[in-house]
View 1 (cartoon, rainbow, N blue to C red):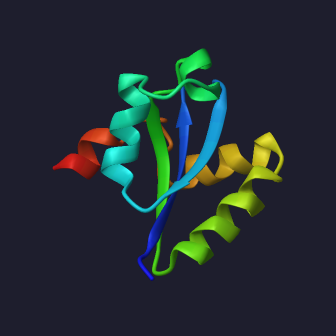
View 2 (tube, rainbow, N blue to C red; view 1 turned 90 degrees about the vertical axis):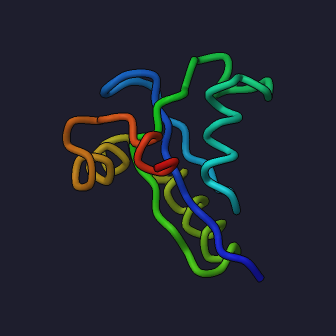
View 3 (tube, rainbow, N blue to C red; view 1 turned 180 degrees about the vertical axis):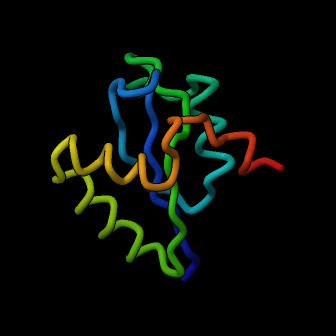
Length: 96
């Protein structure tokens, strides 16, 4: 099995948050940025990648995504702040 990624998107610092999982982070974030799929991220303009983590197995990434989705907003914000205190869009970092 291939690995996976868990990621968090927002529309602005301290804005609306979305937690997702994918096996191809660059492709999936590009899709969110292009608005190719209707849904929550398109509706709220969630295009800024503010957090991501890699997992060696996709099943572990899926479990982690489900866990984070049940966390409080404060816990999710702390996760972002620990890695990315300025809430900088990390998309350029992953395509470089």
